[in-house]
Length: 221
Ligand SMILES: Cc1cc2nc3c(=O)[nH]c(=O)nc-3n(C[C@H](O)[C@H](O)[C@H](O)COP(=O)(O)OP(=O)(O)OC[C@H]3O[C@@H](n4cnc5c(N)ncnc54)[C@H](O)[C@@H]3O)c2cc1C
Image 1 (spheres, rainbow, N blue to C red):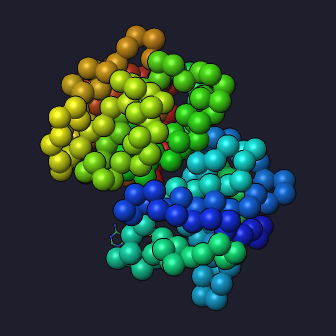
Image 2: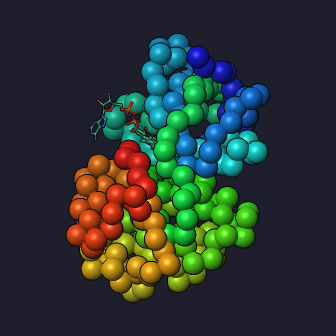
Image 3: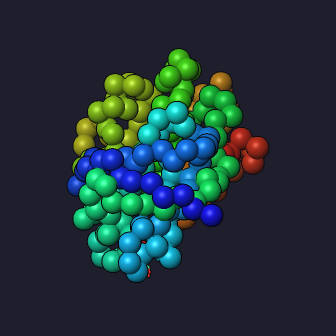
């Protein structure tokens, strides 16, 4: 079962990432970190579904942060020409990624989205202190909400760039050495979200560091 809602605003956050705000349908509830299938309510599109994570808090208008892939000719390409007032179908929220306790959030690209919502909630509850965000991207221009997280997390915001060397940014891919460097005893949980190859590699690194399953909270994109 889906509900119909409307786009309120749509704008670029980075060169290829959109921030899409929708009116919140009555009765829709979800937890920060959860995702939902959406469809576009227009000819040839209503049967197609794509999954996106809420980057809003449940009490706000719905917000999605969406990386676009024009070359796929799929829904994210279609959203590049969407405008306020366009109708969207929204299905039932799902997903198991939620805040269990202080930890290190490890994101690859659009894998930041569940953490945007979770960190927003922690900020609102004054519980942000100590949590760290390790964010892997190709280049600085790909970093979503960079200024915001520098301000919010300070030295606890660690950027890892694989295709650009910049002073003050880690270079290469996330490695077990890098995770160890930023680990702290009181940060028990490792929250992980990103594309499948990155998830696989980081999970193996966490296991090699002796982190057990119960302290790894993950969602694959
Ligand atoms: C739980 C969950 C939550 C997610 N949340 C978000 C989120 O908040 N933000 C976000 O940006 N993304 C998120 N994603 C990823 C998102 O669902 C899509 O996978 C992504 O947006 C791809 O969109 P698309 O336009 O390529 O459309 P799709 O419909 O996925 O692809 C269209 C066509 O492109 C082709 N294609 C697909 N992949 C490739 C490829 N790698 N190379 C070449 N062709 C390809 C396919 O043949 C397909 O028919 C989430 C995924 C999951 C599972």
